[in-house]
Image (cartoon, rainbow, N blue to C red; front, side, top):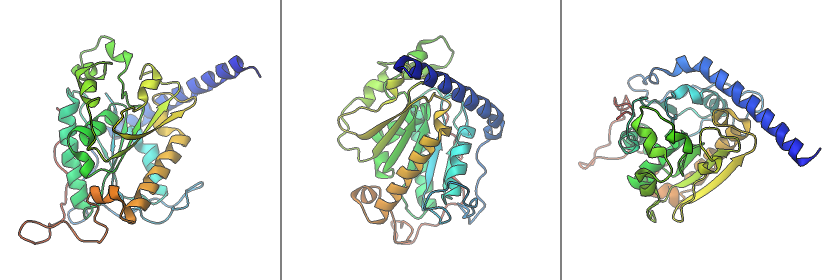
Length: 305
Protein backbone atom coordinates (compact mmCIF):
# COMPACT_ATOMS: atom_id res chain seq x y z
CA UNK A 1 0.00 0.00 0.00
CA UNK A 2 1.47 3.36 -1.01
CA UNK A 3 2.08 6.08 1.54
CA UNK A 4 -0.42 8.57 -0.01
CA UNK A 5 -3.10 5.88 -0.11
CA UNK A 6 -2.38 4.93 3.50
CA UNK A 7 -2.67 8.56 4.58
CA UNK A 8 -5.95 8.94 2.70
CA UNK A 9 -7.30 5.80 4.34
CA UNK A 10 -6.23 7.05 7.78
CA UNK A 11 -7.93 10.39 7.10
CA UNK A 12 -11.16 8.66 6.13
CA UNK A 13 -11.08 6.50 9.25
CA UNK A 14 -10.30 9.55 11.36
CA UNK A 15 -13.20 11.49 9.86
CA UNK A 16 -15.51 8.58 10.60
CA UNK A 17 -14.30 8.40 14.21
CA UNK A 18 -14.77 12.16 14.59
CA UNK A 19 -18.32 11.99 13.21
CA UNK A 20 -19.14 9.11 15.57
CA UNK A 21 -17.70 11.03 18.53
CA UNK A 22 -19.73 14.13 17.67
CA UNK A 23 -22.92 12.07 17.32
CA UNK A 24 -22.30 10.33 20.63
CA UNK A 25 -21.61 13.62 22.35
CA UNK A 26 -24.80 15.18 21.01
CA UNK A 27 -26.72 12.31 22.59
CA UNK A 28 -24.91 12.77 25.92
CA UNK A 29 -24.95 16.57 25.89
CA UNK A 30 -28.33 17.06 27.67
CA UNK A 31 -27.12 14.93 30.60
CA UNK A 32 -24.32 17.40 31.27
CA UNK A 33 -26.26 20.66 31.12
CA UNK A 34 -26.74 20.90 34.88
CA UNK A 35 -23.94 21.09 37.38
CA UNK A 36 -22.56 17.91 38.88
CA UNK A 37 -24.69 16.68 41.83
CA UNK A 38 -23.31 17.99 45.07
CA UNK A 39 -22.14 15.53 47.72
CA UNK A 40 -24.34 14.86 50.71
CA UNK A 41 -23.34 16.51 54.02
CA UNK A 42 -20.56 14.55 55.71
CA UNK A 43 -19.74 12.64 52.53
CA UNK A 44 -17.78 15.03 50.33
CA UNK A 45 -16.85 12.27 47.91
CA UNK A 46 -18.72 8.95 47.89
CA UNK A 47 -16.53 5.82 47.77
CA UNK A 48 -18.72 3.83 45.38
CA UNK A 49 -17.43 3.05 41.92
CA UNK A 50 -18.32 0.78 39.05
CA UNK A 51 -17.18 -2.80 39.04
CA UNK A 52 -14.03 -3.43 37.00
CA UNK A 53 -14.97 -4.12 33.41
CA UNK A 54 -13.29 -5.90 30.52
CA UNK A 55 -9.89 -4.46 29.74
CA UNK A 56 -9.61 -2.71 33.08
CA UNK A 57 -6.09 -1.80 34.14
CA UNK A 58 -3.99 -3.49 36.82
CA UNK A 59 -5.27 -1.11 39.49
CA UNK A 60 -8.93 -1.95 38.88
CA UNK A 61 -10.97 -2.65 41.96
CA UNK A 62 -8.91 -0.60 44.42
CA UNK A 63 -9.76 3.01 45.24
CA UNK A 64 -7.39 5.69 43.98
CA UNK A 65 -6.71 8.71 46.12
CA UNK A 66 -7.54 11.35 43.54
CA UNK A 67 -9.03 13.91 43.38
CA UNK A 68 -9.20 14.84 39.70
CA UNK A 69 -11.07 17.86 38.30
CA UNK A 70 -12.21 17.93 34.66
CA UNK A 71 -12.84 21.12 32.64
CA UNK A 72 -14.66 21.05 29.32
CA UNK A 73 -14.14 23.26 26.28
CA UNK A 74 -15.83 26.24 24.69
CA UNK A 75 -19.66 26.00 24.32
CA UNK A 76 -19.57 22.47 25.72
CA UNK A 77 -20.38 20.85 29.08
CA UNK A 78 -19.16 18.11 31.39
CA UNK A 79 -20.86 15.39 29.33
CA UNK A 80 -17.82 15.36 27.04
CA UNK A 81 -15.97 13.49 29.79
CA UNK A 82 -18.59 10.82 30.52
CA UNK A 83 -16.80 7.99 28.64
CA UNK A 84 -13.44 8.93 30.21
CA UNK A 85 -14.96 9.16 33.69
CA UNK A 86 -16.66 5.80 33.25
CA UNK A 87 -13.36 4.18 32.25
CA UNK A 88 -11.51 5.70 35.21
CA UNK A 89 -14.21 4.64 37.67
CA UNK A 90 -13.96 1.08 36.40
CA UNK A 91 -10.29 1.24 37.32
CA UNK A 92 -11.00 2.42 40.85
CA UNK A 93 -10.93 6.21 40.68
CA UNK A 94 -13.73 7.52 42.84
CA UNK A 95 -12.82 11.17 43.42
CA UNK A 96 -13.63 12.58 39.99
CA UNK A 97 -15.37 15.94 39.60
CA UNK A 98 -16.41 17.38 36.22
CA UNK A 99 -17.04 21.13 36.33
CA UNK A 100 -19.22 23.22 34.05
CA UNK A 101 -18.45 26.74 32.96
CA UNK A 102 -20.90 29.06 31.30
CA UNK A 103 -20.92 29.41 27.50
CA UNK A 104 -20.93 33.15 28.21
CA UNK A 105 -17.55 32.98 29.94
CA UNK A 106 -15.70 35.99 28.59
CA UNK A 107 -12.24 35.70 30.14
CA UNK A 108 -9.84 32.80 30.76
CA UNK A 109 -8.26 34.65 33.68
CA UNK A 110 -11.56 35.01 35.55
CA UNK A 111 -12.44 31.37 34.93
CA UNK A 112 -9.01 30.37 36.26
CA UNK A 113 -9.62 32.28 39.51
CA UNK A 114 -12.90 30.40 40.00
CA UNK A 115 -11.16 27.12 39.18
CA UNK A 116 -8.78 27.90 42.03
CA UNK A 117 -11.69 27.94 44.47
CA UNK A 118 -12.73 24.46 43.34
CA UNK A 119 -9.16 23.20 43.67
CA UNK A 120 -8.94 24.54 47.23
CA UNK A 121 -12.28 22.89 48.06
CA UNK A 122 -11.10 19.59 46.61
CA UNK A 123 -7.89 19.66 48.65
CA UNK A 124 -9.75 20.34 51.87
CA UNK A 125 -12.40 17.73 51.06
CA UNK A 126 -9.71 15.11 50.46
CA UNK A 127 -7.47 15.71 53.48
CA UNK A 128 -4.93 17.84 51.67
CA UNK A 129 -4.32 15.46 48.77
CA UNK A 130 -2.90 17.15 45.65
CA UNK A 131 -5.32 17.70 42.78
CA UNK A 132 -4.88 16.69 39.14
CA UNK A 133 -6.53 18.68 36.35
CA UNK A 134 -7.74 17.38 32.97
CA UNK A 135 -8.90 19.99 30.46
CA UNK A 136 -10.35 19.62 26.98
CA UNK A 137 -9.84 22.46 24.50
CA UNK A 138 -10.52 25.79 26.27
CA UNK A 139 -10.60 23.91 29.58
CA UNK A 140 -6.93 23.07 29.07
CA UNK A 141 -6.05 26.76 28.71
CA UNK A 142 -7.95 27.61 31.89
CA UNK A 143 -6.12 24.87 33.79
CA UNK A 144 -2.75 25.98 32.43
CA UNK A 145 -3.36 29.64 33.29
CA UNK A 146 -4.31 28.70 36.85
CA UNK A 147 -1.17 26.71 37.58
CA UNK A 148 1.25 28.84 35.55
CA UNK A 149 0.09 32.36 36.37
CA UNK A 150 -1.95 32.12 39.60
CA UNK A 151 0.27 29.88 41.72
CA UNK A 152 -1.88 26.80 41.26
CA UNK A 153 1.23 24.63 40.96
CA UNK A 154 1.26 24.68 44.77
CA UNK A 155 -1.81 22.45 44.71
CA UNK A 156 -1.66 20.75 41.30
CA UNK A 157 1.29 18.50 40.41
CA UNK A 158 -0.25 17.28 37.14
CA UNK A 159 -2.20 18.90 34.30
CA UNK A 160 -3.40 16.91 31.29
CA UNK A 161 -4.70 18.85 28.30
CA UNK A 162 -6.67 17.37 25.40
CA UNK A 163 -6.72 19.40 22.17
CA UNK A 164 -6.01 22.66 24.00
CA UNK A 165 -5.02 25.61 21.76
CA UNK A 166 -1.76 26.32 23.59
CA UNK A 167 -0.52 28.33 20.63
CA UNK A 168 -3.94 29.55 19.56
CA UNK A 169 -6.17 28.51 16.70
CA UNK A 170 -6.91 30.18 13.38
CA UNK A 171 -10.54 29.09 13.83
CA UNK A 172 -10.88 31.81 16.49
CA UNK A 173 -10.71 34.43 13.70
CA UNK A 174 -14.09 33.31 12.36
CA UNK A 175 -16.87 35.84 13.09
CA UNK A 176 -18.71 35.07 16.34
CA UNK A 177 -20.21 37.03 19.26
CA UNK A 178 -18.03 35.51 22.02
CA UNK A 179 -15.22 37.72 23.40
CA UNK A 180 -13.30 34.73 24.79
CA UNK A 181 -12.51 33.52 21.29
CA UNK A 182 -10.20 36.52 20.87
CA UNK A 183 -8.04 35.07 23.64
CA UNK A 184 -7.61 31.88 21.60
CA UNK A 185 -6.27 33.67 18.53
CA UNK A 186 -2.55 33.20 17.82
CA UNK A 187 -0.69 36.19 19.24
CA UNK A 188 -3.44 37.24 21.67
CA UNK A 189 -2.56 39.06 24.87
CA UNK A 190 -3.49 35.98 26.87
CA UNK A 191 -1.17 33.69 24.90
CA UNK A 192 1.55 36.34 25.11
CA UNK A 193 1.16 36.29 28.90
CA UNK A 194 1.46 32.49 28.91
CA UNK A 195 4.75 32.80 27.01
CA UNK A 196 6.30 34.83 29.83
CA UNK A 197 8.96 33.20 32.03
CA UNK A 198 7.53 30.65 34.47
CA UNK A 199 10.56 29.23 36.24
CA UNK A 200 8.55 28.94 39.45
CA UNK A 201 5.96 26.55 37.98
CA UNK A 202 6.46 23.00 39.31
CA UNK A 203 3.48 21.36 37.62
CA UNK A 204 4.10 18.65 35.03
CA UNK A 205 2.02 18.88 31.84
CA UNK A 206 0.97 16.32 29.29
CA UNK A 207 -0.61 17.72 26.12
CA UNK A 208 -2.48 15.29 23.86
CA UNK A 209 -3.20 16.69 20.39
CA UNK A 210 -5.03 15.11 17.48
CA UNK A 211 -3.44 14.77 14.08
CA UNK A 212 -6.76 15.62 12.38
CA UNK A 213 -7.97 18.34 14.76
CA UNK A 214 -10.37 20.54 12.80
CA UNK A 215 -10.86 23.11 15.58
CA UNK A 216 -7.29 23.78 16.71
CA UNK A 217 -5.74 25.02 13.46
CA UNK A 218 -3.09 24.10 12.70
CA UNK A 219 -3.36 20.94 14.78
CA UNK A 220 0.24 21.24 16.00
CA UNK A 221 -0.86 24.30 18.00
CA UNK A 222 -2.19 21.81 20.53
CA UNK A 223 1.39 21.26 21.66
CA UNK A 224 2.66 22.97 24.81
CA UNK A 225 6.11 24.40 24.19
CA UNK A 226 7.59 26.62 26.88
CA UNK A 227 11.24 26.59 28.04
CA UNK A 228 10.31 26.73 31.72
CA UNK A 229 7.53 24.13 31.77
CA UNK A 230 7.95 20.37 32.11
CA UNK A 231 5.69 19.24 29.27
CA UNK A 232 5.26 16.06 27.27
CA UNK A 233 3.45 16.41 23.94
CA UNK A 234 1.67 13.35 22.55
CA UNK A 235 0.29 13.36 19.01
CA UNK A 236 -2.64 10.98 18.49
CA UNK A 237 -2.67 9.80 14.85
CA UNK A 238 -6.01 9.93 13.06
CA UNK A 239 -7.81 11.71 15.93
CA UNK A 240 -9.93 14.85 15.66
CA UNK A 241 -11.03 17.43 18.20
CA UNK A 242 -14.21 15.78 19.49
CA UNK A 243 -12.82 12.25 19.29
CA UNK A 244 -9.78 12.95 21.46
CA UNK A 245 -11.47 12.63 24.91
CA UNK A 246 -13.06 9.30 23.92
CA UNK A 247 -10.13 7.85 21.98
CA UNK A 248 -9.00 4.61 23.65
CA UNK A 249 -5.34 5.61 23.31
CA UNK A 250 -6.02 8.86 25.14
CA UNK A 251 -8.11 7.18 27.83
CA UNK A 252 -5.30 4.69 28.46
CA UNK A 253 -2.77 7.52 28.48
CA UNK A 254 -4.74 9.57 31.01
CA UNK A 255 -5.11 6.51 33.21
CA UNK A 256 -1.38 5.84 33.04
CA UNK A 257 -0.42 9.44 33.85
CA UNK A 258 -2.83 9.71 36.79
CA UNK A 259 -1.65 6.37 38.20
CA UNK A 260 2.00 7.39 37.85
CA UNK A 261 1.33 10.72 39.55
CA UNK A 262 -0.41 8.95 42.41
CA UNK A 263 2.41 6.42 42.82
CA UNK A 264 5.12 9.07 42.86
CA UNK A 265 3.12 11.22 45.25
CA UNK A 266 2.66 8.30 47.63
CA UNK A 267 6.43 8.11 47.99
CA UNK A 268 6.80 11.74 48.91
CA UNK A 269 8.18 13.13 45.67
CA UNK A 270 9.22 16.78 45.38
CA UNK A 271 6.13 17.42 43.28
CA UNK A 272 3.89 16.01 45.97
CA UNK A 273 5.70 17.96 48.64
CA UNK A 274 5.38 21.14 46.60
CA UNK A 275 1.66 20.47 46.26
CA UNK A 276 1.40 19.98 50.01
CA UNK A 277 0.09 16.46 49.55
CA UNK A 278 -1.15 15.10 52.84
CA UNK A 279 -0.54 11.36 52.78
CA UNK A 280 -0.62 10.92 56.55
CA UNK A 281 -4.42 11.09 56.80
CA UNK A 282 -4.51 14.38 58.78
CA UNK A 283 -6.58 17.32 57.68
CA UNK A 284 -4.88 20.68 57.18
CA UNK A 285 -5.01 22.68 60.38
CA UNK A 286 -6.19 26.18 61.20
CA UNK A 287 -4.08 28.94 62.76
CA UNK A 288 -5.50 28.09 66.21
CA UNK A 289 -4.17 24.54 65.90
CA UNK A 290 -7.56 22.84 65.51
CA UNK A 291 -8.32 20.57 62.57
CA UNK A 292 -10.16 22.13 59.66
CA UNK A 293 -13.62 20.54 59.37
CA UNK A 294 -14.30 18.77 56.08
CA UNK A 295 -16.35 20.91 53.67
CA UNK A 296 -19.63 19.37 52.61
CA UNK A 297 -20.12 21.25 49.34
CA UNK A 298 -17.94 22.66 46.58
CA UNK A 299 -18.00 26.41 45.86
CA UNK A 300 -21.28 27.71 44.54
CA UNK A 301 -19.60 29.66 41.75
CA UNK A 302 -19.53 28.09 38.35
CA UNK A 303 -16.53 28.73 36.12
CA UNK A 304 -18.25 31.71 34.58
CA UNK A 305 -17.21 35.29 34.18
